[in-house]
Length: 453
Image 1 (cartoon, rainbow, N blue to C red):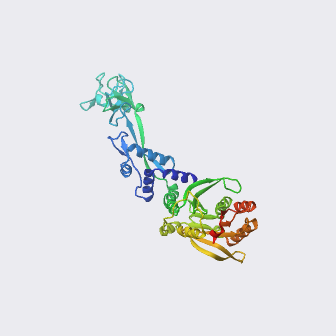
Image 2 (image 1 turned 90 degrees about the vertical axis):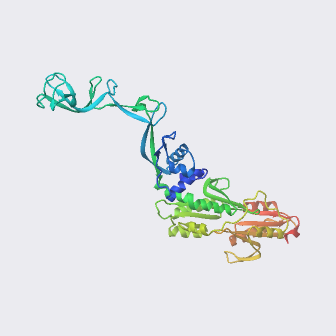
Image 3 (image 1 turned 90 degrees about the horizontal axis):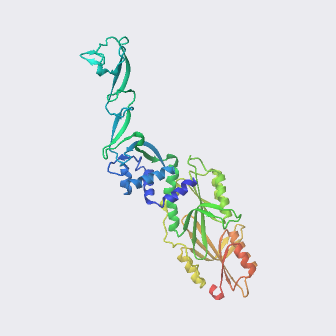
């Protein structure tokens, strides 16, 4: 599967390749067949594809060859063409010649041998007025087996008299007139092409639902990387590859969605092991928003595990249904500059402009059963994942210590909030800064405590 994913990623860079494969997957083109074209430099063409892509015969041949080499298409023998080795003309005439002297003055027929004079010749040479008369000694041949015998059907050269069973073949170019042997001729094998049925399911997913899903993420303001190789942030230090990695910066925090893709081309259910492997990878990379695209479906055990681990799963046709109903947003792409805090009021306005639903002094019951109050709780629904941002405000006369930051972090953990922002005035102690960094809390230090009101 990895090879197909990487190939499709490369294919997307060439609109002609994408157009052709999409048409073949859709059944608009069943089989690509060559036709003779004496006006073409190649001597043949694939008119259906040339018309579709508006490119030359050579470009079509290159595209088809690439797709066949990568097992996207299956090539099958269709025909073989011979070209003149001198001028590459296809306009050739076959000539049968004597293998001994090279003369074209040969004839084919039943060969007779006259016993008495040992003459060997074609039956036509003996025939005279309804009888067999030997052209050498003029005697009549009356009885087969007594006067003569048949040596079967062969060739005879009228130039040198040679008898032979197979004539030699030469070709004459009708454009430049040269003669050449079959071995000297330039040969080209023509192929017809069909979609490789073993790859049809994967190709259909990669070029259809997956491509549309990637575009949907981009429309939501995410920067999307396919087959993303990540090693710098893993807890274990190991390198990982994520099928789709989507990041979006809202100025305060960067949201990261990890998307895994598991497809069984034989239509078997996907088991717990595959889901666990994806979840373990996401955990090592610190990715909390997880999506799994599954074809065709998960086993019951795997589905329950995904639910417990808060993995959003799209099975079989669910992704198509979601994409058909999803409404792209006009959210801006990732920011190059971080949000600059001015006042609490401007912060709330910024969040609302980004599509957040904002609550101040929000009361939320944690997993422990304890009710917590958050200074600001903001929700943002992507249409399939809801991001929750918890914002705490701490104002003290001197530096904010570790205990205050730890209390905020504990509260967020109990509620199940991963994206955290802390507004502090005047600043954090060194110990508190280190803890906040370790717990991935975005800290905004505000000199004037009035701005936090």
